[in-house]
Length: 139
Image (cartoon, rainbow, N blue to C red; front, top):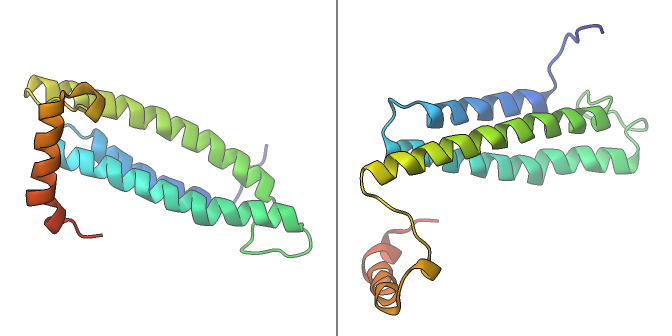
């Protein structure tokens, strides 16, 4: 197989996002920041699918042979490569998240959802959110 001379922009973008994931995996980074990096990675990936993957799918739908947009001569092949990369990145995300959860537990920090709280705890969390957090959230 001949090695290609260019890296498609979408594959390059996934490589960039993988560097964000690497920051989340770095044990020298504080836990709070590692969680933040996982959030950035996820947001980036959401946007990537909304914009870039959607564009590649439109190229296939409208026949990329008629319009060669952005050098993507084979959008189907690029989508297959994207799928392989994203599956591997999601595995790594899950590994990192589970590692972070274990480290949080060691610090006696537990993440729970509303189904794991009693009524009094739910009320406390709702009140705390409304009184202390809501006004500080910036979209």
